[in-house]
Amino acid sequence: MIHVAELIQRKRDGEELPVGDVAELVLAYARDEVPDYQMAAFCMAVFFRGLSGAETFALTDAMIRSGETIDLRAELGRKVVDKHSTGGVGDKTSLAVGPIVAACGVPFGKMSGRGLGHTGGTLDKLESIPGFRVELSHQDFVAQVREVGLAIIGQTANLVPADKRLYALRDVTATVDNVSLIAASIMSKKLAGGAEAIVLDVKVGDGAFMKTLEDARELAETMRELGRRAGREVVCVLTDMDQPLGCAVGNALEVREAVHTLRGEGPPDLTELALASAAHLLALSDLAVDESEARARAEQAVDEGTALQAYERWIRAQGGDPDEAALPTAPVVREVRAEHGGYVSRIGAVRVGVAALRLGAGRATKEATIDHAVGVVCRRKRTDRVEAGDVLAEVHARDDTGAATAAAEVLAAYEVGDGAPVERPIVLEVIA
Ligand code: URA
Image (cartoon, rainbow, N blue to C red; front, side, top):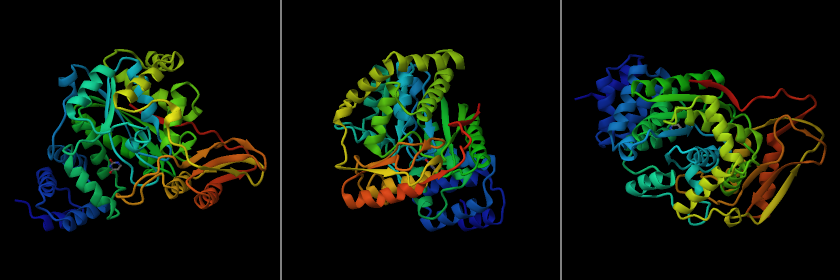
């Protein structure tokens, strides 16, 4: 039997713990035999002292064993690929990647989360589509992936319950942003969800957990190592989150932008990221194609309209109306205009995210409800040339007061300078 206070002390003092003790601690916490205050103290000790590779794997493995696991290969008879993003402002990539991959004949079954923070998570975005159901039974989920080729649903209650509790605890004890804890949390869900090959989009910059390329590399390497130990293939793409991804920030606005991207009319950064992620997934799939053939197929699916058709089939299968006109719209749209001319040198992702959150696009507390219609659309992006009075962005709001506050915040997020800033690609690095 473990002595929890002693484990906390040993970790506090920088010791590497026996993997069996780490596993026992997590499983005992999941069984409610360890109180939150001790687990919080343990997380804080880990925050300062870190975990070794072996300890991180023991934590991940124990979290997986705290609940059920899914074997999609056994149920579908196919190699299943999955993608995950560490999260950022305006990140609607999965909504475009899923249909592209499905249109290329590779099954895409994904369990996703809701957002706490600036804007909604993938499930919240999908719920802005009238009628769309995010809760499917396990059988219906598998049947839809088999028949339609694509399903995105909420994580089932019994998948990695230890992470659910631990993540909620970390969220309120300032212990989220530690590489080992983030890696274990993300990878436990991906591994339990049954994908054999995983593409991880690790965001870097102002609007991400990882502020520097160096930290993002460390997180990527830690997650790849967890995948390797579990016998799964993992490719990490390190991508820019120093400005919002694409233009739209806010649930229905983001769904609309994902649909435009599937039509080949999306913003360049989102289009590139969706195609690059889809190509990595296809190259890891059982299609047996190399990266360049995978990229060609992804582009073809968009050009020929099969990706958009896959989107429409998917949304209908989950009860939703795929017609763009069915998406909710906000009653007040206010333009944000440049005060002087120059080049957009910066759009603070966090500031735009906070503006969207205050409009109601995200949740400040777990219980808060989301307003699917509201948000921000960044009409100009970094390196764009603007003249005084040009529209930089639009604020979509419920009322005039909300619009005025958000417009001021969005204007403050934009920096317009004299010199043309250096272009920064959306994909900064690939670790394969
Ligand atoms: N996303 C997760 O699922 N877990 C973390 O710890 C951080 C981001």
